[in-house]
Image (cartoon, rainbow, N blue to C red; front, side, top):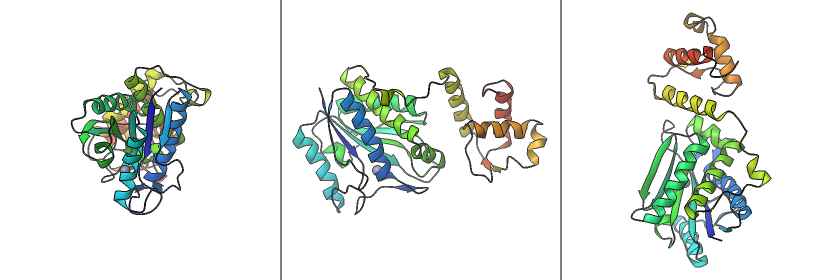
Length: 279
Ligand SMILES: [Zn+2]
């Protein structure tokens, strides 16, 4: 049995509140993911302590107090692993997941790598890789420690992912599997953790993810109204295709339009006609 300290980042109030995006708060998402992770770990026989268990928890009103309380508690408890959960934020354009370990920590890097691998696989977020840093909570902890930046809360697409329960569960599941890999133990799934992943066609999901990544890489996006009469000029089945993609959740956007270039739409239509998205 391992002792695992889960640290949902930030506080409900005070100097150490987190980032906010589209009405969702990092300090709430971190607790929601942390609680799911705790349940998975306890279910597989591990001992867990959490810095915050409720969204309304505030450890300290000051930033230093907030950070030192976390690593001191983990050190005093003699945790085997320390996991801090966060959401990233930048300029609304950046997206994806990344995992930090303390600079120079070999075991921390191993744990970060194991978690990051699963994060990419489970969440389908873009892979920003494993990184080294000297954040207080991973620097002053005596055990292998990581800080997981699950996704960007200020990026619309990542935000919608974090806003969904299935998205948050995918984050928790990824961290859980990474911890199991690091510890060299198998995954223990209860009914609650097993049911989270809808049994969909894995191969199809992989192809869609690859395609979406290619589309995201294209430049000069402009807003395209999918009921715009211009779409008829691109292809006769353009509107039908885009509506289908919206219906099945491949495309997400506001009612007034989807940020697509003509090139992107052509790729979608080609794949649509080839039956990639089903009919
Ligand atoms: Zn944070």
